[in-house]
Amino acid sequence: MRNFAPPLIAAAAILMSPLAHAETWRFDNVSIKSLTPNPTVSLVSQSASETTISFDSFALESGAYAAHDNAPRITDDIYYPGGVDKTGMMAIEGYRFDLASGQRLTGVTLDVTFMGELRTGQPGGYTNNAIMMHVDFGEIRGNGSHVYGDRFDTERFVNLNGAATTSADLDLERIGGGDINSNDGSYFSLYSYQDAFARAARSSNNDLIEESYANTWASTVTMTFHTAPVPEPATYAMFGAGMLLLGGSAWRKRSARS
Image (cartoon, rainbow, N blue to C red; front, side):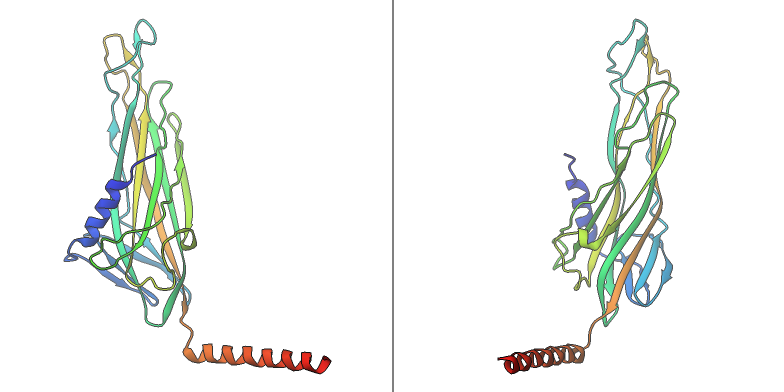
């Protein structure tokens, strides 16, 4: 079980930090405010019921991972390292959204494409859980310390000298702990979790024959907010009156048959 406490703490710290550098983008039905400096948000499309935005600054990269020296002997002249097990969080981004007056949220769809690769000149190189996506939805309350939301992970294995892509949609209905009809002031943060395990061969004098290189990044991240007008009080009154009329009609029919 992986420990996601550090990113959650970091996200909470972002939420509680002053928004001196925050920037806000206002669209027809929703506005987006950054909780981190220097973000980039673009409008992809909007209609009466959907607003799709793109996070252009959400580009992730990892570094090169070299094998460690504690290598078990496999043959007389070749050592194989136990591998490089590097884990880390990359590019935490925090945002908050507010609905326009008279609008309610009916759903949220996240579409993200991650890519990853491993390069090594020796057989046996591979990555383990090279690409993972972690999404946290929550609501700011009080000083911002109230954080909740379900975790969403996606992963894809990447083989020797290969590359793979993976994408996933996340609907708000899959995220627990919140009322989707009252999400003014809600925040969301997207971040990548990588667990890279790269194997490379070493000679008998422990010289690294080939360095393993693991890399992941996000190529596209878009989010669609599905909204609908808040029903007017008169609409509820008309609905209630209609139900009363239907109930009265059914009662009269039953009385006539008895």
